[in-house]
Image 1 (tube, rainbow, N blue to C red):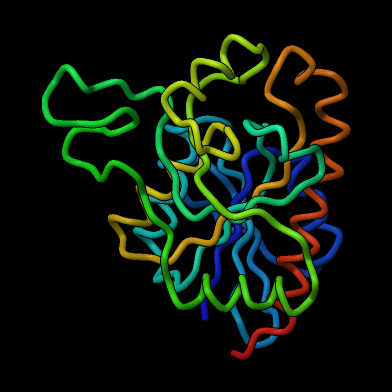
Image 2: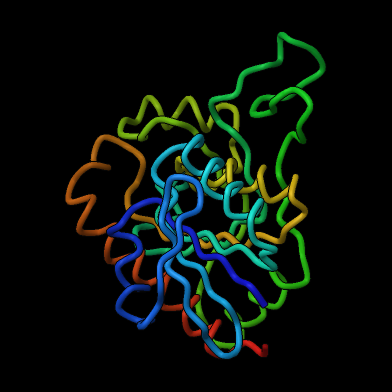
Length: 232
């Protein structure tokens, strides 16, 4: 099986570099992927860069050149709900764009791009198996909608605007819906595990890098353990 793991930032990828060794590097799109062989699986780990365009461009470039069987997306997100706290894990069930406003252009809902689904639902056998692994290992996680936009959410006003349109959304970040849109069009299963690094308000930038590194490693450790146990 060929597995891709993509994260936006270097601080979110550090754990993977410590866990896997002796890989060689290959360039896809504008980013370098490290190629490892793990449990008879080919594993490609790369940075997408920050934002929707970088995420879509680099995942699409990889999928155009390699027949990837499974895409993991990890990294961090901000909380949108009072019961979602720093350090919590969210297994995304769907993604939408919180900065897509096309309701005046036709029969579209908030978050929908014309010609695309209202939400990109993540539903696959491998995702179900991963959720079962989390449950078997007694790893606590939340499951639900994550919304994506090209802005860092660092004020309560921004957070309130998003929650007005997406009351049920659990988290907010800058790449997930773009990954999900590319995976949808390439017909590739996507598993998205985000760790909460901040509360998405005026305190969001306090020690963000340090905490993002910590919770990014938390998500990465789970995925590395899962891949080690996967059958080829």
